[in-house]
Length: 259
Image 1: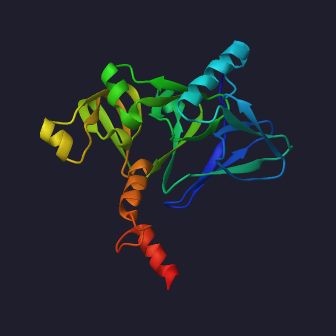
Image 2 (image 1 turned 90 degrees about the vertical axis):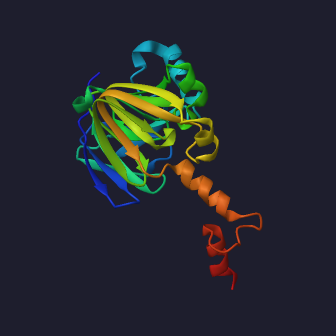
C-alpha cells in the first residue's frame, strides 16, 4: 500500500509541533490525543488500527488492537482526512519537551524500529505494528526497550524524542546504550540486552542493571532525556514533605506560591 504524500513544517525548539498539509482526499494517522489544531474541511475519526489491516478483515484488526493494548497504547488511532477541495492543515504536538523527527521511510529501507511511545503521526499507508525483542535476555531485562514499535511504508512518519537527539551511523561497530535512551534504529541492526559490567557496576553504578547493545550496519537515533528518567528525577526530588524541600522542582514551585 503506497503512503499518501504529505507536506509538513515543524515549529518550535524544545516544545515542538508539526503542521501537516493535506491535499484533497489525503489522510494522516496519529496517536490518540496528539492533535493540536485542525483547519476546517478536515474530518477526523477514531479507527481501530492504522488502516493497513483492511484486507485482513475483522480478525486482523482485533489482533493488531490486542498487541497495542498489551503495550499500554490506545487500541484506536485517529485518521484525519481532508474532505475539502483545497489544501488544509492539521497540527500535532509533542507530549513532552524534546524534538519531533521527520523520517522518510523510503530513505531507510522502508522500516524503522522505535520506542513504543515515540510514534506521533504518519502519512496514511504507514503500517504501525509491535516488535517484541527477539532474545530472552532482552525480553526480561529490556525495561523500556522490551517492546518496540515498527513503522513500515514508503512515506513520511514523525517520531518524538526527549531532550537532544543525536544520530549514530554504524558500519559494523557495536554501540551500548541505556535502553530508555534509544529513539529508534533502521537498517541491518541487531538488538540485544547485555549485563552492564560487573556486579559492583550493575548495582552501584547508577546506570541500571542492563544496557542495550546495537551492532551492524544502519542508523541509530539516541535521545538525551527519556521522559521516564525526567519523571523519576522529579519524584525523587519532591520529598516526603509534599515537595517543599529546598532545591526540588516541586518545592521551588511551592515556595513561589506559598508566600
